[in-house]
Image (cartoon, rainbow, N blue to C red; front, top):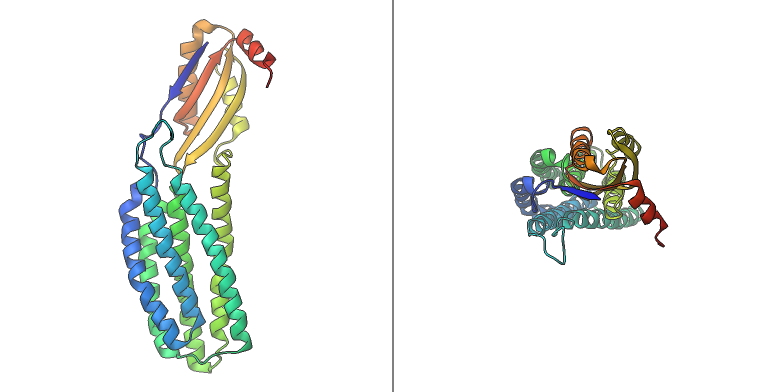
Length: 304
């Protein structure tokens, strides 16, 4: 019997951690503007502005959670937590998605109330605040864009910034409509639209986070193709107990048992398997047990 273990990135090195400084800048910019939008929304009577402010407030909470998660992820592993705290990034993304969905429900409720009783809107100040918000959101998006493709945590923050950017565009449109036509219902229409726009992306983020927490197979890994690749290694007669899962964004793990026809080739088989997993599937955090058919038969005969 033989076993091998191949390590990936060192503990604490996560995809989100590589973009920590950009998250900090985005947090500073967003937090500095939330108060402006809240005051502007209250003074102008604009639901669209308040909806945009609410999304930006969620951004602040989401970015703060993301940075907190990264800080936890940088802590070393312990005997009680052998993977350390890297899963905090996924929990943070899950929390962000849930909060955004709840916030959307509130915005839609408030929009319905305003359809029934439209308030007076001060379109000029509303427009000025919305333009400033657009600039802040564009800067935040630029800061987070690179990390969004690597980290689920950063992706959640990027989606929030994207929603806010489009929200700002909607508020600008609503302000112009109210200014030039006097149709005040444009404000709750845009407010409801801001809430609805982010739902599909937030739902995707929620499903991704849950998929990771359920230790589902990473979508970029074809498990059937991976098994065939292992079976193609010289001397391998069977593959069983094959599992691939995501620990956190950018860090996938894999474990399996390989049955071989000659235990004298265990070391060579292990080396070939590790190389194939790394080169063909990008898997570096792997645990592989090498066994012969006799050991496999003994394992299969054990009661579950």
